[in-house]
Length: 215
Image (cartoon, rainbow, N blue to C red; front, side, top):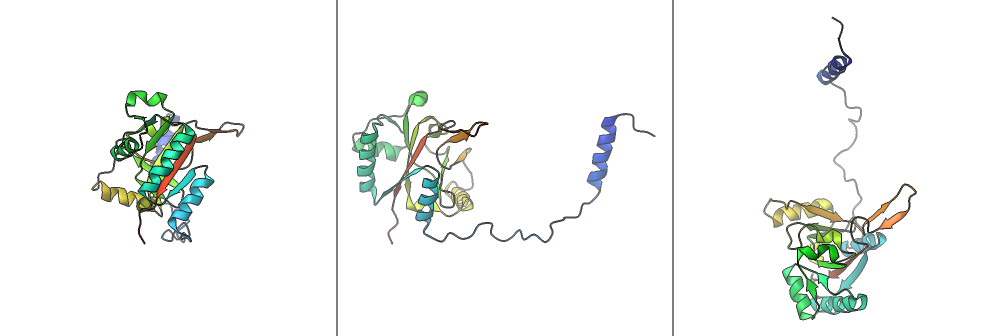
C-alpha cells in the first residue's frame, strides 16, 4: 500500500534506519590517549601565562600579609571603594584594612568592582572556577566592571577534570547548582569582528595569587 503522506514516509525511513546497524568508520581511532600534552613548567607559571594571554591581570603575593598590602594599595590606586563583597574571610580582611564594602544584593546593578574567592584555578586554560556554593552567590561575577579574585596556590589544579574531582570531594558528591569557568575578561565580537570587552561580565579580571604552599 502506497504511503498516504510525506510524514509517514519520513517516519518509515527513520524507523528503518534505527533498525539497521551502521558500522563504525573510525574503529581504529585511539580514544584512550591524552588529548593534551603534559604541562612542562610549574602549574603556577602555566596558569599565569594562559591567564595573562587572555587579558587577565595576575598579581603574585608571597603570603597573607603581602596580600593585604598589595590589595590595599591596588584598591586605593584604582579608587575601587566601596567593593562588593559577601565572603566572610574577605570581609574581615577588608575591615582590617579599613576598606569600605557593600554586601546587599539589591546594590549589585550599581557596583563597579567586586572581591570574591574561587573554588579552583585551572592551569591548562588559565581559568578561574567559581560556584553558587560561596556566599557571593550566582550574580556578582557578572555585574562588576572589575572582578578581583583572591586565590591560593593550594587551589591550583592542572585540568578541568581535576577541578571537578575536587568539587565532588569538597561537597561530598553533591555539586553546587551552578559551576562557572571564567576564562579571561568577558568578550564578544559583532558580525564585523569588532571585539567588545565587558559585554556579558567584567571588563577586567585580576587574580591575587597567594603562595600558601611551603616547599
